Image (cartoon, rainbow, N blue to C red; front, side, top):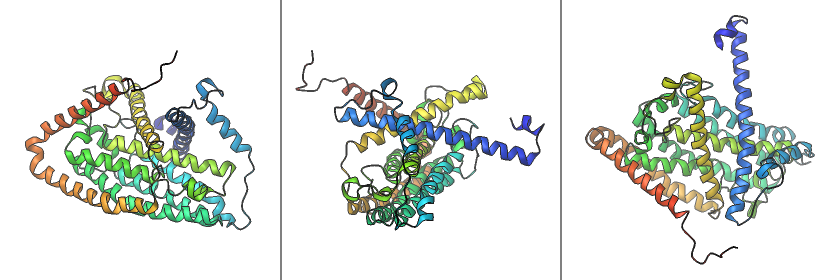
Length: 387
């Protein structure tokens, strides 16, 4: 496409056109995925609470999120009299921009990325962390004590959980020897035991540490202290309504997908299915291969998002002191131990028992997954018999 545009447009205009096209694609994907995940969360929560969830608006209630979005566009967008008007208005857009920028360096296939950065891992972590500025500004500028408490909690939580999350990311970086997400994905080509999560015991534990801390960074239960409906009404966005309120939720679901995709690229094989011994773009061509790659990485990320929803509707919300203690007393030492452990593994044990460890971890994970899958079809004792 670059060569085609270069024939008719000057080089500087080609850069602008491609940037606008990439931005439009990213925003469209964020909006469409948010609508789908909001519907999925309603369905998941309803099933876990023995309800049906949305059923009327569209097939299976799929258009319920779209209907709610149209309702938000038509609602009055108010600003409290005591609020700082400028900061109050700009806060949701800052939060959204942070989630949006994280997508720019996420590859959806082999070479299918808006900006292929050599430091893509830390770029994504940095821009996603900046979402906290929008939350803090919203809490401060609203002129409400509930909102202020929510903003302060989010600031304390993000500052704390960023450290173990970054330490868990250092583990796959040590294994792969690069900060490029594209190279990390290419290194995991082949069968699923080649995925970084099965490289060694420290990478295996680092995946779970990353997923838990990433859940906390997205303000998801049981770490949703910034909102905490039972304590702070709605937390930092208590005073928001209409379009600006929806931008906070677009940012939240965008961040959920971004951190899930990052976990997939770092640990779970990236765009590889794990059951093909070759890179799809080499056999199917660039476009058809990357179409398969995009479907794989979106599917894996969706599974991780469903796990986040499962956790939200299964676990009670922690107190703020419990959240901080969990990070500083447990996650931080575990993260440090993982970094030291993977370094020693790479130096002394990788060449000796590396392959055997991959097979053992991969085999144990498959057996566990089969056990969980079979348990879903096991009849529940005392279940009512329905006619």
